[in-house]
Length: 93
Image (cartoon, rainbow, N blue to C red; front, top):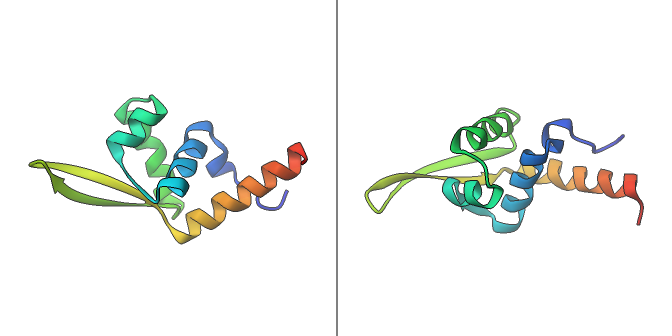
């Protein structure tokens, strides 16, 4: 099916993409809290999305601690929206 993306379709990766599509950029800890997963689980999913070219990360120091900020790439946003359209086509109007 055109647009259906097995990389994005995994539940946690789908939720990461949805959150980043809406937020634009989100701190790793905020994404972790929203998904209710451990840091290692989130890290593994983010790594898959980064390897696919769908997510970028930016590291910055905040409150004397290094933080990681996540964003969807242009390619990631396009893939996510195509996947959304494919899901809508499956379930109907």
